[in-house]
Length: 483
Ligand code: GDG
Image (cartoon, rainbow, N blue to C red; front, side):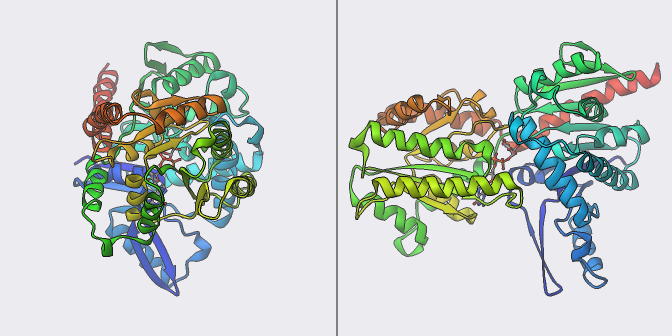
């Protein structure tokens, strides 16, 4: 019987080793949640890295970790510290991540990292090939594994391979600067179906395939090595019910059940009955537009001084890739900006920005989503942005306003949000004022339309649609084989 194989850089498990004790819990991210239904649905195997380098394991712990992984229908790819340095921190996060997000000035092109990237993609292929049989359906995820589809297809042409990119695919003018552009395109073209979050990313990919590899394209199909490859967009959704139900339960919490964060948020509201709260949540990443957001909030407080002491920006920045220098610089810049603005505007009873540099448990995330009147999601570039969707899903009373950057993939499906250009502080400040003053019936009209859409196109639906499209490419493979 044919099976499904899911492959991502990290397994959907968090594995912690503490003095030879192993602690395994499920990951909470969007990808893990989205694929959960597929993974739990019978015969499927998830392949990825465990998060533990080979050097972290010993004769006693290694078999125990492997047994836990197997128990969860997963298989791991053994990575050394050197692999993690060069493949993950190096090529994935110092080359592909900045380049694909249009940060050319942050992009490094180092041959040593490229060699490691190829080696590690081959390591992933080895584990896949040990487990794959003809007829299997294979779904490869994200920018760390761009070469993997080709490595699998060369050895197992009768498997059906899908690839999904979670980050933007840049325009030809940016992609052409990449030294290994042809190899990477050919790597992706090992797949039978290539999916992106938006039509724009799809269009950029098609244009690169035409202009750099001189391939024939017919609408969204590419002819390559006697195969037809389908390119399509699949905007990723969220687990709507999980967020909506958590928010509904949260609203029933009695005073004693409230978290410390919730009590603090309530204090702010009671301080003045006109007080309003603005929320931002993101990994501390330069693509998320954090400095711009703080500066535009400063501009807003200066331009509309009547809002001083009335609004507060609650900013959750989750630590990320903190051993990459650009992330360390961003952390310093963010700390300084928050300090400067709080120093400039604070009074004895009011601080304009509450800044948390940590990750919070899910329940606290719900505290934040449900307490804030406005969500200010202003990335300078973002593949999709699930936080914007989660905020809308938690608004059980259909109030609240989403201010969203045009540069996030999510903006393509959330036209009822207030869309802004994050580099235009004037626009951001004016829009923020409009959000804070929006009448309740308009809030409701906008939120309810977005909720309906999110309810219909959930992450589960996203995975199903991708699989349906991938399965339909099988018919094309069969026709070509029988010719
Ligand atoms: C990449 C692409 C694309 C955040 N802080 C906490 C926490 N989170 C959860 C959120 C959300 C997820 O993490 C973040 O997802 P995003 O989509 O916003 O951003 P990336 O991490 O950059 O993801 C992005 C995505 O892949 C999917 O394709 O949308 O464009 O960059 O689910 O809720 N969760 C908890 N505590 C936190 O402190 N529990």
